[in-house]
Amino acid sequence: MIDIKYEHHLMPNPDLPFIFHTDICIHNTSGTANWHENIEFLYCVHGEGNVTCDTANIHMNKGDTVIINARQLHAVSSDSDVKYHCLIIDKSFFKDNGIDVEDLTFKQHICDIKTGAHIERISEFFTFDKSLFSVAETRLAILDFIVYICKNFAVQSKNESKKISKSHAAVLDAVEFINTNFTQKLTLEELSAKAGFSKYHFSRIFKENTGFTVIEHINAIRCENARHLLRETQKPISEICFECGFDSPSYFAKAFSKLFGLLPSEYRKKHSRH
Image (cartoon, rainbow, N blue to C red; front, side, top):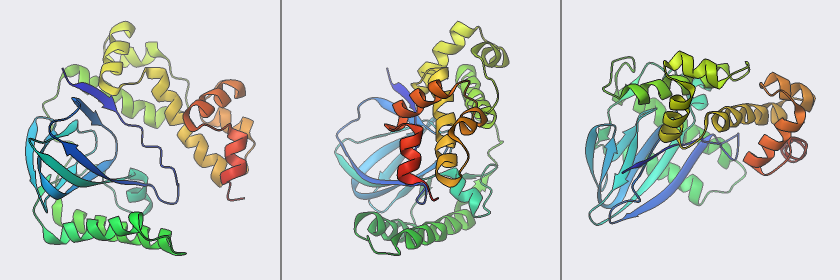
């Protein structure tokens, strides 16, 4: 049985809302598939492997790029060894640069030299470049890349129906609702009623499809938004606490510390722009 996990992408550097790493899949996988809200790019640099995206199975050779669209359940496997770059771009970066990807999906299997060249160039910034202007240059390189991808490989509306189970569809809708209403009071009873399940069944399928409890997911979204406010504003921490949907400063501090390893006051002292 495949384990399913929802990935919370908590970007360590808000100036670089990206995740980049190079992975090696050594003969088969751990049996784990994941999904998330952001778009992911896999670029094969050595060997060959298979990428499962929802019900599609994509064979990836050296030089190929596979695009994982938002909310797609995916996993990588290989009969031999495959090495690939993984680039995840936070959806906020698209929005901040005037690119609306909410209604778009992308061609998934790309055999295109220019796409590979873009990703190889981006990899150099994450691997080697530590210069004074590396943050600005990295952002520029990734913006150049996503404009190219949007122009050449956007293929259809995300609103087109996909064949997914009722329970998975319910969890997708719940995650989206939580992500846009986290400042409000949210209860398990309300969320399960919206999904059309009992709270016990909904709790189980949410955990199965995300790897998190409902409360853990709500707290993570609230803390991520609190982190932004702590860094970018001078609002009192108690005000940020309530603005992000927490009921008490003590509970906020506990949840934030569990997620980031720092109390809100410690995080502000270390990362505030002010």
